[in-house]
Every structure is written in C-alpha cells, then in structure tokens.
Length: 127
Image 1 (cartoon, rainbow, N blue to C red):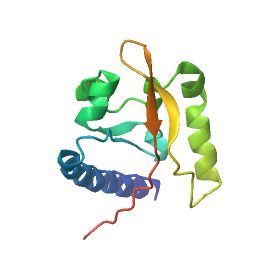
Image 2: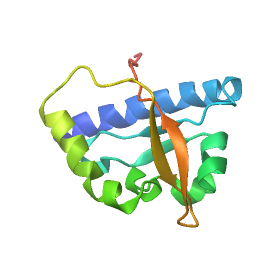
Image 3: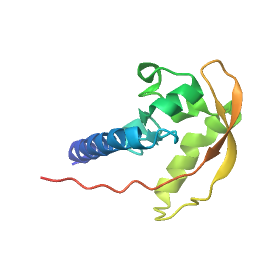
Image 4: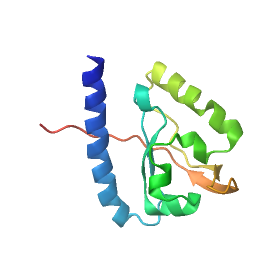
C-alpha cells in the first residue's frame, strides 16, 4: 500500500511539474519553487523556475532533488523539516498565504531579502 501511495504522489508531482513548467513561461517575473511533501522526499525541491534559479544562483541540475533548507538561512533550515512534519501531522487544510519578507541563501552562502507567498497546489490525476 505504501509503495502505491508513493507512486501516486510521484505521478501527481510529475503532472503538477508539467503544469508549472507551462506556467513558467507566462510568469517570468515570479520565482517559483515547488517542494515535495511525500514521506520519502519531504522538503525536496522538484521544480525551480528560471527566475528562482537566477535569484538563488543555482543551475537547475545542481538544486533539484536537494532539500529546500539548502536555500534558507541555516538557523531556519535546520528546523524546516520539523515544521513540515508538524504541519502534515496536524492535517491542516489551510496555512498563512500572506506575503512575508524573509531571507534566502544563494549558492555562494550569501543572504538576500525576498518576499515569500505560500500557495496550495491542487491537482488531480487523470486516468
């Protein structure tokens, strides 16, 4: 059963990734980073559009599959997986979608300010 759920999540991620890649060309002014919430890949970056790669100074192949904590200040990144786990355990259906000013960590370990806005990704599987 667990393997089937993982395959289902992987299929959903693939379909969602495809839709975001299409959106990427339309939203060139918005950096998009999508992470996995599956048990085995929790926090792994599975999509980062061109602008986000540019802002964080990463090539896609160097950051995809890595944990999102790699692009956060260390003090926050160390706790981020725990935050995700607590969010999933509580099975919350909503989260704060307000824009907030935070800091990102680029590939040279330099902090830079950014505005973050979380959005829930809804997608379905078509047979």
